[in-house]
Image (cartoon, rainbow, N blue to C red; front, top):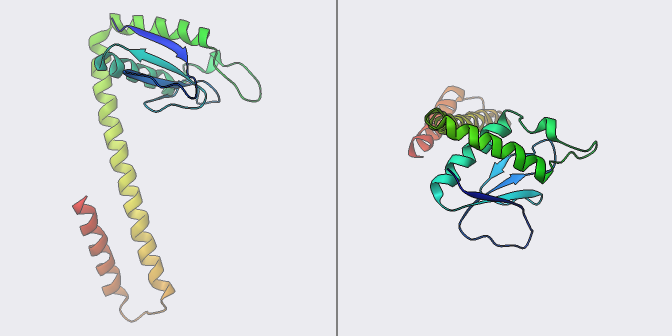
Length: 163
């Protein structure tokens, strides 16, 4: 069973060991991160395995908008630490009962995150190609359109293959 401590993050406090931070203000409340947020809770762990297991549980709860019903406030909604502790502990216990299924889902989530990152890289490459092609028109040189476009695509494609 993962052993962890949930506290409110203090701005100038340094934490030793394994920990994750959970955003507690705004509509993204519940969002986990390895780096501290200004308004967040910190969850400290004994070992790296527990950290990874609970990180992906927190990520799943955040993506599913699990914390939205617990948000308080009309202008800037926030999540109370006691509400977070109660809901999070229940979900951790439930995850432990279905640990094998949780591990499979974590593996699938990691794969999806890798695919998403690759897709973002491809979109950036497409935008760069588009920009290079459109910048050609700014040169007002319409003589070698076909050659220049192919050279640009070849250059950018080769750069992409190097990454």
